[in-house]
Each structure stands twice: as C-alpha cells, then as structure tokens.
Image: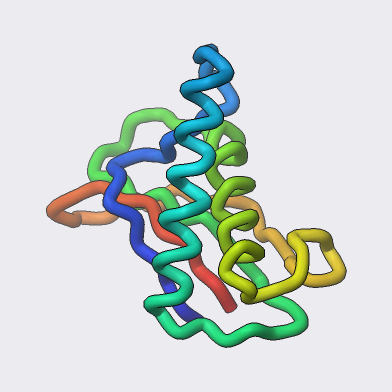
Amino acid sequence: MKVLTFPWPRPLLSANDRMHWAEKARLTKLIRTMTTMLARSADIPATGHVTVRLVWVVRDNRRRDTDNTYPTFKAMCDGLVDAGIVPDDTPEFMTKLAPVIRLEDARKARVELEVT
C-alpha cells in the first residue's frame, strides 16, 4: 500500500460547499494535479486495478461527516487516472472504499489517499 499525503488540513471540496462554479473547477484541477504529481513521485506502477480510500486525519473530536469528503475523493481518483495508474476510475479498474475520519495525536491535520 502507498499513502499519498496532501498538505491540506481538511478536504478542499465538500458536498456541503456552495461556491461559484469557477472556484470549484479551480480546486478540482488543483486536487487532480496534486494527486497526479504525488502518485508519480511515489512510483505507483500502472496496474489493472487499485483499491483506494480517503483518510482525513484530524486532531480533535468535533463532529464531521465522511460523506462530505466525496467531491475531494472523486478528484483524487481522477488524478490517479491522469497519472496512468489505471485506465479509468470505474469499478472495473478501481475499488473505492468509503472515506474515513481518523482521530490522531498528530502535529497537523492532513488528508491522505491510500492506494493498494
């Protein structure tokens, strides 16, 4: 398993966001590009199938909803396709496990993408 770590304390896109379409498009492109770059630098080989999960590492026990992370997760999966890891993010090539929120005694909150 490879873990791609993103420098964001929370997912950049949320299902609850109400933002201008241009801002959403900009953030989606940023997430895809960052995922592509991180996947290439992690030397994840091209393969026929991967299993992925978004992990949001938090430092406090506030209530959060894992469903809200799906727009960020979707853009990350598209970034793996852009990196050439798999041909598409359909179930034939990618199993998407439900995102999780993990409480951790860490210096910084972060978002991770586990790729198996």
